Length: 385
Image (cartoon, rainbow, N blue to C red; front, top):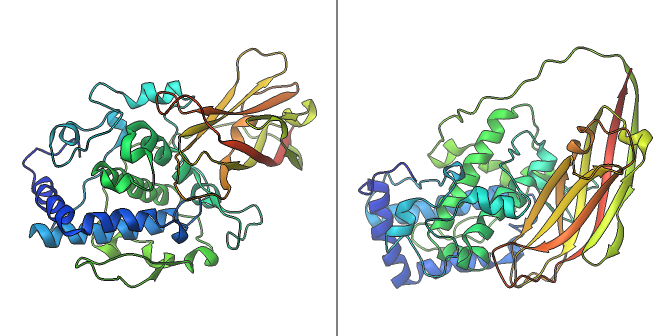
């Protein structure tokens, strides 16, 4: 989006189609489709395939209404660190009420909320998409993956206004460019993880609730049908960012040891897990956190995680999960986290992992009713000679 000239045909198509959609009610229909939480398109592994289908039908509707049959939805690359100028200056592509303006930088907003630019494309399927602890992924318990709770939620909170509420977010044209980038990140993840298997329960998920290019009810489809963007008539350029590879000298493996911890709560918005010295000393780990919360239905919040040795003043591990309010969602939400970094600090003493709920800095009224319900940490630890 940021690289397109203002007279680009794709921008011209959006300028023509959006007012027509607003006048006809088609725009409100898209908002209502996204607000229907019965589709389980948030806080579950349906997030990525469901939104890919919504983007496709929106793109086709813009192509029809604008008369530009080759219309392709641009994406907003967050590495640009700010909202693209055209989305701020064009009266059709902007919207009143945004809390992020032309001088706001995403990197500064992230720092104020305990975040940093963190690539999630090395996460495995279960962590990136979100998979329940029972490894089933179906049934009553769902978890959002890092593909949702990381960059996706953060950007919604950064922009604010309608974008800050998932029941209203499609009203902001920036929503569509933001989700196009989420869709691109999925493509990058697939490029980086060609060995990952999409499990059958995920492939069999039935996705529906959409309207086609003419506003008619669109047929439902399975998640398996969404795997290749070519099936929808588009592709993304290969991500140019090189993989970071580290060469290490081989070491003799001594033992593997599974371990599991349940968070001890110190209040409705705080808790901790202590990892004893002998287990904190593992040189390698495959660790997953299962975080359950009761989110504030009206305001954004952040779950901050940090770990330090008992004698250390500064944490060696930090992460943050951004929660965006979903009006009408009264159930708890689960989030699956990659927590391998707890064993990358070379700490040979007891490690305390602290968990705390805070309001999203710079947004809302500075308070939150989000409550911690539980955090389970599972780890497969490896010890070397």
